[in-house]
Image 1 (cartoon, rainbow, N blue to C red):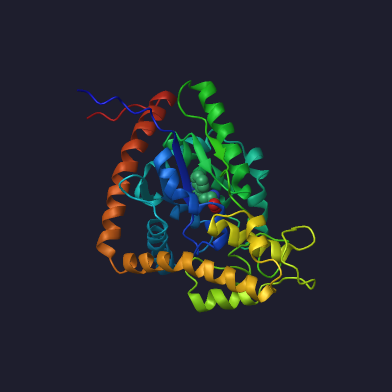
Image 2: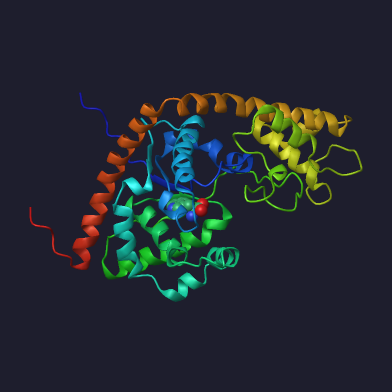
Length: 338
Ligand code: TRP
């Protein structure tokens, strides 16, 4: 008897820069949902090492961070048997489609990008063409895989918009070239703020003591949370307006325990901030420790990581080639004689 064919899963594509370890905020806002998403979607996750070159990198550090990012993706529960995991530079189609799309993207739309304006202010000595064209490569990443959904944080929404605009423009000229992607906003992606300045999002580009990195070991986690900013009224209550520090700690606790902030606050009612911080620190440690153990084991097994990368590159390349051949044909490039 023939198996009924499963309905086609929607394709999710996301790119992750190998520049530094993600924070607890990245984990709570996005990464903790990835394991479950593999069942509902066809997931493709790409470590975007080419994008990282837009800012000067130490070659040895970049190589190390690319492998570490892969190990972290595996450690949070992505399964290479279900999900395509690879390095962007291993699939040449990204650079090739980037060129074609750059001929269909306007200088005007690129110069409106907030991230370009910010990054060129921050790296005034190195405003290179890659920094300017960054969103084109990102559009190539997404469109190569005919992705339906792109999980991104608020800061990347503008880039997904430009990707959509380019895809629609291209499809207008050459119908059926690309799937037009939508940004995917995680249904319960809580927002985590800086431990020292809870008006700002937790970010790894801020000072060390403002964020928790996924690789912070227990003593570091405990110290950072003990020093987190609270307030002086002493009541454990969720109220982001007047009690942003305490509310941020409750958000972390609730997300990691799978409870509501109200239940977490109720369970700690009448206790002091010391008790709240102990509970948060313990929950964070309990979440990160098993992940870090998996990460350490993976980093000690280079042959395995390389095997995952080789398999991922093959899978990604097969999909990317199909799109690229279609695009080359549509724009009028001659097929290479066999
Ligand atoms: N620009 C994204 C960031 O900095 C990374 C990225 C590159 C990406 N290509 C992508 C994200 C494609 C989603 C889809 O976070």
